[in-house]
Amino acid sequence: MTTQLHPYSKATAARPAVESAGHVIDTSNLTRHTFFRGRVAMAAILRGLGVKAGDDVLIQAFTCIAVPEAVISLGARPRYVDVEPGTPNMDPHDLAQKIRPDTKAVVIQHSFGLPADVERLAGITADAGVPMIEDCAHTIASRVGGQLVGSFGAGAFYSYEASKPVFVGIGGSAISNDVALSAALDRLYPEYAEPTQATQLQLLAMFVAHRIAYRPSTYWTVRGLFRALVRAGVIKGNYNKVEAESGPSDDFSRKMGSLQQRLLASALERVESQSNHRRWVAAQYRTEINSAGVTHLAVQPGVDPVFGRYPVLVENKAAWIEGAKDARVELADFYSTPIHPLSGEGLLKVGYEPGSCPNAEWVAGRIVSLPTGLQVDHGQVKRAADYFNR
Ligand SMILES: *Cc1c(COP(=O)(O)O)cnc(C)c1O
View 1 (cartoon, rainbow, N blue to C red):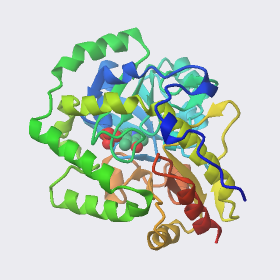
View 2: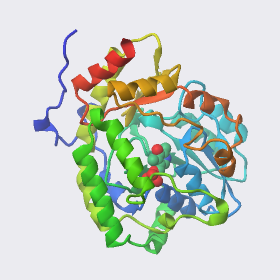
View 3: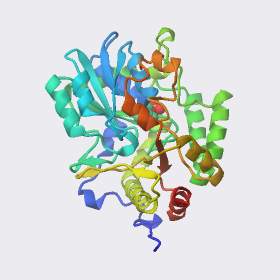
View 4: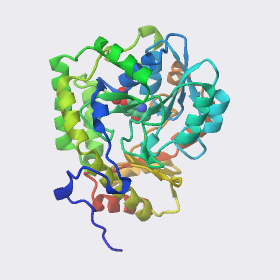
């Protein structure tokens, strides 16, 4: 087997555009309404659409707690739509069954950067007269029919924590494709407070520490350390306690600090070149991982996924995750439940009834994902492929 070289060497990493796509992402949209976290950006969009206490918002099962948390922060109710069988994205059939005239918004998700069936989902929401929002936490650059994700609905949001394609410590952006929503975000934005200097410096420390310590081969060590620091209260974790009675976390009243904004502006300049790297890494995984026990996800014609992480389906997920620690292969388990990381009582608290979205439960039991970022070179791909193919 020949070793394939990365098509864009470090020397050309600042290349601004994706030639194949024909046009450049306008990242200025992403720096206009920035928030403390992705979930805060999502809640701001819902507020901008007029969602209030008691309203119903449809989201997909196979998501993380941040998404229902954003709905619950407004006193609204998350309702769950199942994913398409064998995929991590919303099922248009189930959406058509569950959408109602009084549904206030539908949040679709491009899980791992694999675009959802946006055209059909948008058709269903448009017919029902309900605004659609795109959760772009896992990708900035994926396209469907040449059109960027994030541009199909009324608005979209992005996240910039460590496991996301662009990392600034913690943060999120909201964008709108709709004049009324855009005006509403302009009107609401001044209500959001700047985080304290101490918080901004803490996030900067997280950013720097992660930059220094993280490589795919140190993933398990860094993750263990991160969790220990969260438990010790030194840094902020990814999961807030979500209970309607205790009220929303303070996070929901904050915008992104100016320090993180500067990191974001500079990181966004590299999105196009990093996306090319992610495309290349995903293509390598697709050809090199060829074990009969591993299923790659189908990519529909006309879809250009830029995977924030590269997902595959396996049987015996827990055993693969355990083995990856010993083999020092970065293999993530999320989402491991329909609303990660909740189980049992926790699911009921965010309004998810166990068994109600069987496809989401099936995929959560089988999906694992590999990194696609700039730290992943051909050696890392080989290591992962050897692990799966042995
Ligand atoms: C990470 C994530 C979010 C929210 O991100 P935060 O910045 O942590 O609030 C929302 N949706 C999905 C699918 C995510 O993975």
